[in-house]
Amino acid sequence: MLVGSVLLAAGQFGAPTGRIVDLTIGRYAALDQDGYTAIAMALFGLSALALLAGMRAVRAPVSGWPERLMLGWAGALTGAAVMPGTAAADVLVVAALMCLAGASGLMARRFGEDARWRAAARPLEWLALGAGGGLAVLIYVTLPGHEVMIGLVEWVLFGIDVAVLAVPLVHLARTAWLEHAAAGAVETATRSALETATRSALETATRSTGRATAVLSRH
Image (tube, rainbow, N blue to C red; front, side, top):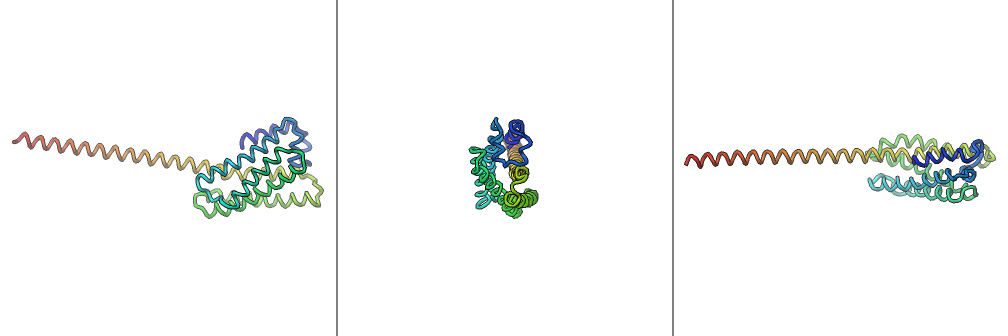
């Protein structure tokens, strides 16, 4: 995701900056002669797959529709990156934005019901509201608004969706670090307990041997 953000920033130098407000993301990517914008879109799509794999590894509550919608984001955004500037790319970008907006609402509810992920629920709730409002504005701009400032709306909504991915990513990294630290603490405590038990056993054995030697010497 960090690489994708850098490439998006670099893409601003390869395309007319003033057109970003009025052009859809798919059309704007076609104007980027270096291809940075399209590559960034593909990376953001693939990053969702990596995030999903990580959350499934720790049994995060994303099974069912949240998982399917994240896969939809990944597939649609990657597909749009392959064919920038086409009508299909515009449709795929909108589909990707809708998928992650829906996933954010579902994940917020699921995370709120899971004690391990409850800390990530509140930020996702606000992002889900922002994504829902962004979709409403996008529909208005697309239909009766004659696509005026459609690029601005799509990019804002895209930024919200990236934040939706960042929230569980940060929580996943934090959870993995805490579990690793807890495992290390348990291992240290176990090693200390074994060393203490071994030392006590040796002291007891030495004491018993000394007593036995004293008794034998008397006889």
